[in-house]
Image 1 (cartoon, rainbow, N blue to C red):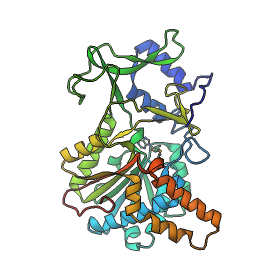
Image 2: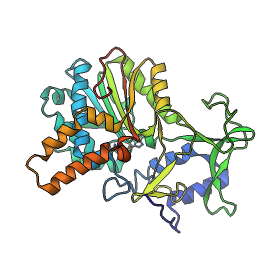
Image 3: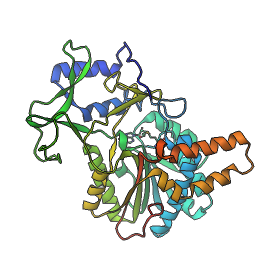
Image 4: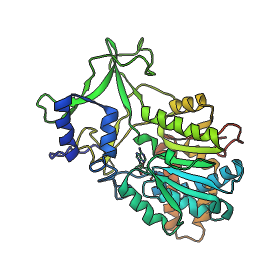
Length: 370
Ligand code: SAH
């Protein structure tokens, strides 16, 4: 991806944030992300969010229907593994345009028992995207319900799927300085006309899980997502009460490390993260090590993370490509194969995207993890 030139005009959210910072001082990156993505009126997901080939960014279910179909087959298997309950919650976190759920339900039609037992819950905060999900899923299944948070879905056996959800949960950044860790904040340029990164003058509270600064070079950045920690803790509470399994798919790192992964994307190109907030997507890499550690501490079982390509291949990607290509024209076959390559090829999404499964303890091993 290339970088685009920043716009001259400020977004409404940028103007408001500048005024607020003038008044109250710098804000954390987490507060900035929460506003830039989730502000009820001017946040990206409520105003401009546009997912897909014609939008700002594209996700695996938007590239190939095989992604959702294989996950649908995985979920049917997982339903059996949690004891084939007659009624269970099928929960998707951050369903975007509803493509993944539509593909899951189509693939799962072969197992009527699964579809009849599923109470579908979509956890989505954006009114705009809820509307798109409603339009797409109306035909597939009438009984879809929406929730603002995972806790709003009723307790009971659950299967949860999240694709590119955790990358948009807010992170805080800390920078190593000569005097130890200091939080990286968002303040203003000297002319007070634009947003700019700055450092907190006081040290962070000692209870934050920051690495020992000794031996870490000045300028290095460490990221923490408190929102993710809280979310995983809530998810594990559900897993401890009833048999349940969650599949988390996202781009990120297997081991917690140093580095600035805050990234903004607009119209399929990188975008300066502090320019025109609300008009571009804003994400950070998911720290799978942190998620796994929190889940294990909470008594849940963890499988993975494994690279997305490996996971999809184990679930039968090649066979699905073959079946789908049967009787198709050469150009249609090329599209099917090209899509499969994009979601699973190591140089494409196959390696940087990872899959992690978090389960209630005592369940059989999930498919796809080797
Ligand atoms: N899973 C989809 C879309 C990913 S975009 C796909 O693969 O195509 C991220 C999605 O998460 C959007 O639907 C966005 O509105 C939603 N979202 C972001 N933050 C959220 C939050 N805190 N709670 C609920 N949904 C959120």
